Every structure is written in structure tokens, then in C-alpha cells.
Length: 108
Image 1 (cartoon, rainbow, N blue to C red):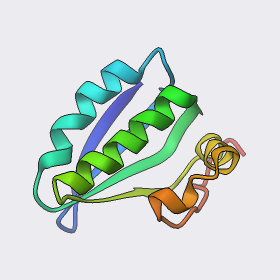
Image 2: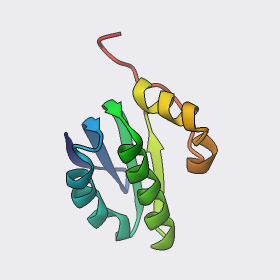
Image 3: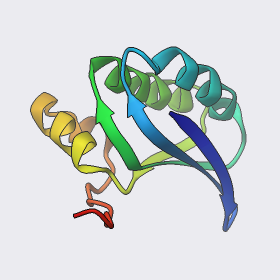
């Protein structure tokens, strides 16, 4: 589990890789929170999220709320199958408001 940071066309991209579960949520939160108050556009890339549970989902909800509170433009992109399944199960796609597009996976 890690967050890789990249700058692209004036946006900061945060690539979350690995699990977003109760076991990784605290570390992910510590890595994510400093970015939520910055100026400019922020994009969380979810293509490499292999597992997500309610703790991971709560972290994404927190990120969205904090970004809104700080007036930081935040979007989620390249949702993995695991993320799409949880969003569908919890009916949260509209809450985030981002297009839900499965990222291409070399493994299938």
C-alpha cells in the first residue's frame, strides 16, 4: 500500500496502489491528508487498488469532504474493479460525481 505522487498539466495525481482496507487506512490517511488542502486540482487514481473495504471507502469520503471544505478540486479516476464493485454495492457513484471508467489491467 502506497501513494505515488505525480504532477501533470497543473494537477497533482495521487496513485493509490495496493489495498485500501482497515489494515492500511491509517497510513493512507496520513499520506493523503496533506494534499487535500493544497491549491490546484487533485486527482486520486484508483487503477491499482486491488481491495477496498468500508475503511477504504470512508477514507475516500473523507477526502472528498475535506477537499470540498478546503475548496480543492478533487476527482477520482481510473477506478479498479474492486472500487467499482464497492461503489455499486453502496450506491455512491453520484456522491463522488466522477465518471466511472475501469482502468485497463494487464492481468485481465
